[in-house]
Image 1 (tube, rainbow, N blue to C red):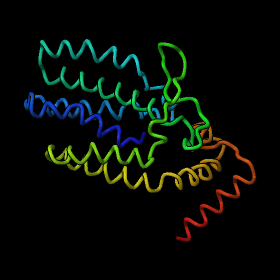
Image 2 (tube, rainbow, N blue to C red; image 1 turned 60 degrees about the vertical axis):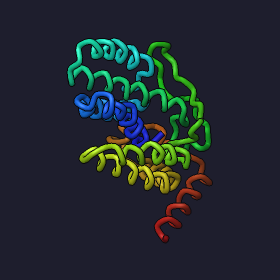
Image 3 (tube, rainbow, N blue to C red; image 1 turned 90 degrees about the vertical axis):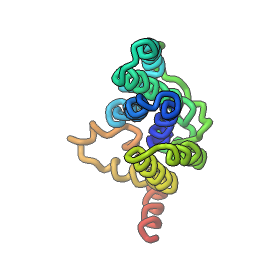
Image 4 (cartoon, rainbow, N blue to C red; image 1 turned 45 degrees about the horizontal axis):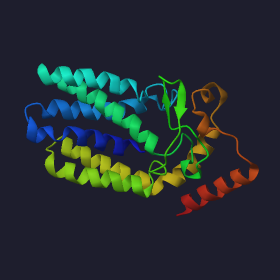
Length: 220
């Protein structure tokens, strides 16, 4: 699932506080947004493993949320929603595709790493891959109501997420082709920092198809 969708879902779980407890809504919204994007900061350092904790984020969110219910402070509310947003992110990654450059091919059985069980959880592929039409549809379904109920600057954040998500969805498959070629030619001193899914050596036929795809894309 693409990052804009994660960000919008994070804002969505905090949005009810606009009605229930408007004085704490800003803290909840900021905390949920930060938590919903936090796990993907491991994109180039053990993606979906280094900062993805599908069980531990929940274990942290529950006691903080209970504490915040009795000792209500903006910081505790923000912390509760931060961990809730991070937990939701990891859960939604499980519902998406695998950890691969072309997840629509369904060749990977790795969705998110479970540090408690010390094993990878398999993808369910309810949303086939990040940027899939159903991923964009989910982002729009969540983002439009948020655009209506939120005020600036969060409203503009929602608008940006929708714009980026829609654009990414349109270009997703072409970006995979370009990335495999670009990152595959990275020099050795830098190569070790490139995720393996970007520099996997493919067959000559596959490389030819990639070159043809890029040439056709640039010619458009």
